[in-house]
Image 1 (cartoon, rainbow, N blue to C red):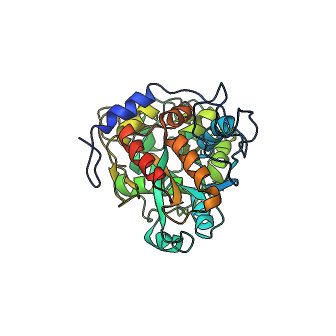
Image 2 (image 1 turned 120 degrees about the vertical axis):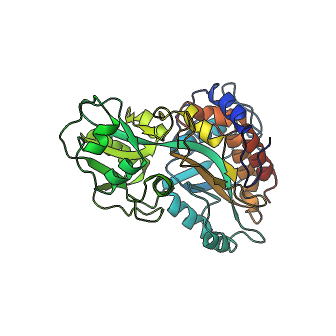
Image 3 (image 1 turned 90 degrees about the vertical axis):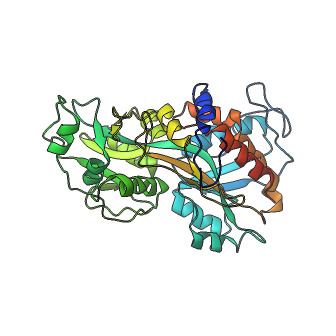
Length: 378
């Protein structure tokens, strides 16, 4: 069975699992990709994968999602090793800021952990002459519920409990709801220090979409990039909340697995209703992505994700970062560079390179569709 729009696909699991099982580690780069020597714009260094760099063009400027920040660093570094004449700049700022800058014509692509809304698509037509902004899924990951609780190594939570923690309805680590999910655990009689994102965040939107499906009404706010829960403390970006959890005892937050790994943070398993709690691993997230549905039309490849999955070994708190680009009307002096970088990012080599950094390689059937959409950019 092939991936179809608004239809489920079990066949995607094969491509996803094959990529997850063969992940390779790549080092993070700096804010641009000019730090690594190579053999020229159309060649590749001995250490770099073969990349079709295209002709020398103006620097490619982008911004947005911090969820994909570590992945973009890796991809830029590898791309720069092969394509020294092409500069890729990526600034964070969060998904909301990225989309805003894209629709103002300030950047060539934006990273967003949520698909463009209809009003944002309409706004993009001003800068995409003869076209509009589209969503291309490139970086997939999972949202870890990261925690730093004294004496607790294998925390289990569920949708309603997580929602209540982040809305200050549960304020103690030894609360009955948490204790019931963790029989035998030595939960401290300590206040919960919950951290949330202060910037408009696609990670926040994905988390709150999960709450909408799984909290049994405990989360009363609409899914949104802007934080709405009561209480807690704020920090900017995935790096910011991760740093707070690392430093503050008895704390909890939400961040991509990449940040959990780089900060040596523990991630809670989630009780989904399956036979056993599901660990926050790339393999378990890949099982969820394998059943994603395409909700977009034409060259837009926005996905519908099943946050309420109860399938065995399917981690429900997932997100995909879209690279927001113009389908038509891209700037001529950066179009070839844009296509070259995105083509590498979605290739098997690119997806493998980000895998060991805590990201989830997308199913090959989906990456094939993204590759075709990238080739058609004009």
